[in-house]
Length: 560
Image (cartoon, rainbow, N blue to C red; front, side, top):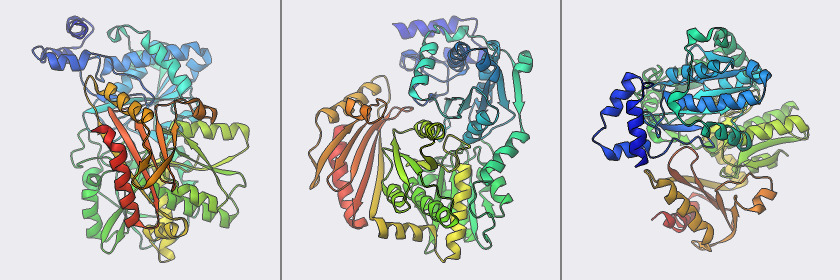
C-alpha cells in the first residue's frame, strides 16, 4: 500500500530530523494513523495550505513548508531576475512552529537566490499586505491558520499587489509545487547562512503601517471622553497594532490582560474565532466590571473583527454583516457630509454576503460589485479600479467579519476596522445612539435581514468525496420551494452563465427565492467542511426566523 511505503521512506530517510523521526516511530503500530498522515499530500488550495501540525505528507510540517516554498521559488525564478531581487516578505502569527516555518520559508527562498524579508516577531496579516506594497516586493507569505484550533497552522501566498493569489497565478504555483517529488530533498539555508539574502524588518515598517491606518480616520479629533472599549486580541497578533493605534488616537481601551500575550496554545480563550460566542466570555466579564460601551476582539492573525454592544446591561454581539452595514452607514454619511464621497464610488462584497450593505450603498449612490468568496477577489477588483480608473473603491467586506476601508492594504484589515468602528461608536454616542440603535434604524429604512451560517464537517479519507456528492446532489435536484416561498433561480458558479458574468469557475451554488432571500452552498477551500449560508428578508425578526427554519429544513436535508 502506497501510504505504508511513504511512511517507511520517511522513517528511513537521513534527511528527517530526530524529533520528526521519533514522532513517526511512535505510530508504527497504528496503521489507521499512518494512513491518515500519508494517504495523500496536504493540498495547496485556493486559500493556500492549512492543516494539522505533525509528521507526514498529509500534515503541515517544515518539510511540507519547504516543498511549497520550493514550488513558489521556481515560479518566481521563471518570472525573472527582477522578481528574485524584489523578493518576498514573510510574516507569521503566534501559532506552534510559526517562527520555524517562517524561517524555513526564508531559507528555501534564499537557497534559490531569492531575497526574503523576515519580520523580527509576529505581525498581523494586513501588515504583511501593506509591507509587500511598501517594499515593492514581488510577493508575500503569511504563516497562519487564522482562527483554527491550536493544532493547526497554515501558509498563504500574496502577489506583488499585496493580494492573495488569484486562481490563474495560484494554478501556476501549484503546478510548480506538484513537480517536486520528494519534500525531504528540498534544501533550506539557515538565517545565518543566507547572509544578505534575508533582511529583518522591524519598527520602521510598523510606524509606516500605523500612520497609514490612522490616516483613514474621518473624524480623528472626535470627542472620545466617556467611551469605554474592552479589547481582546485572542492571544494573537492584534495586541500591539490595535492598541497602539487606538491609544494614539485617544481612546480608552481596557485590554483583556489574560488574552494579550502571544500564546501558541490559546490558553485563556475557549475559542479564538470572533464568529463564536466562546471568544467573548472573558471580555464580557471585563465589560460588565468596567461598564464598557463596546467589546471588540480580533482573531489571531488580526484580519477579522468582532464587536458586541451594551444593551440593557448585557452585551449583544453583532454579525459581520451587521457591523459592516453600520460601518458603511457611518463612512458613507460622513464622506457625503465632507464632500469626499466619489461620484463613481464602489463597494465590493461577496456572493455569500448579506444584501443589507447593498441597500445602504444605494442610499448614497455607491455602486456594488460582487465577487466569489475570498478577499483575494476583492483585492483583484481594487487593482482593476486602480488600473482602469472607472470606479473608486470606498469599502470591501465579507460576511465572515473581515472588511477593508483603505486600499493601502489589499486584504481584510482588523486594525483599520477596529479604529473605524470605535470612531463610529464615539460619533453616534454623541447623538445619543449605540451601534445597535443605528442598526435598527438601518432595518427600519431598508427591511429586516437575518443571516445564518451552518457548517457540515466531513473529515477523513472520503470527506472530499462526500462534499462533492452533496453539492452535485443539490445542483442536479434544485429544490422548488423553501417553506411557502418559491425558489426562482439557481446560480451555478461552475456554469458558463456565471462565467459570462465575470465570475471564475467555482463549485458554489446560490438559490434565489421569490422574496429576495437566498441560500448559498460552498465547500470550504481550507477545511473539510461544506458551508450553508442563509440570508432572509422579512418584515420583522419573528417572520424572518420562521422563514429561516423552513430554508434550513429544505436545503440541509442534503446532509442527512
